[in-house]
Length: 154
Image (cartoon, rainbow, N blue to C red; front, side):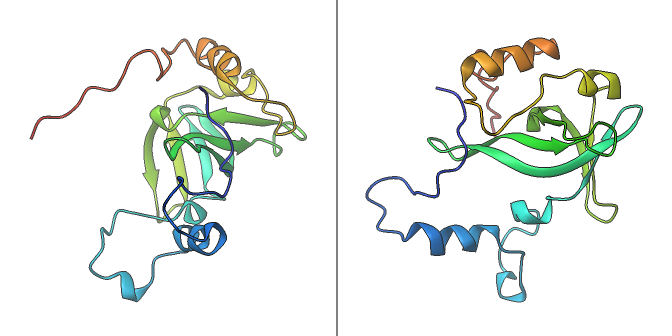
């Protein structure tokens, strides 16, 4: 099964109020989070970061597609409207080379032309495994559903 937009619901049986708890995950870190992982950031803190391809800036992070079965962030929704009116594309977190918090940039190992010619993302259209296959094929990448990531041994 492919990624779906986060539905706002938690796995069955958690007894969690979806809306209130969801907001907690999206908030920016605060002083009361002092004993938590300093590398863990809110999705909202990445929204608006500039996307930088290997040959220059190409857009900004507008949102995310989250697999509501596994809670994995499957794609960054990238708005390239500064270059092409109304054009949105998807970029997998697997393709991110670096994230620079002070400069508010996300760098990917893709060329601007590749991103420009990527299949456009349309939130009003269903997005499933077939769409994912086209996207990964466009970038000549093997899909995450085919090759499970290698596990690190401590």
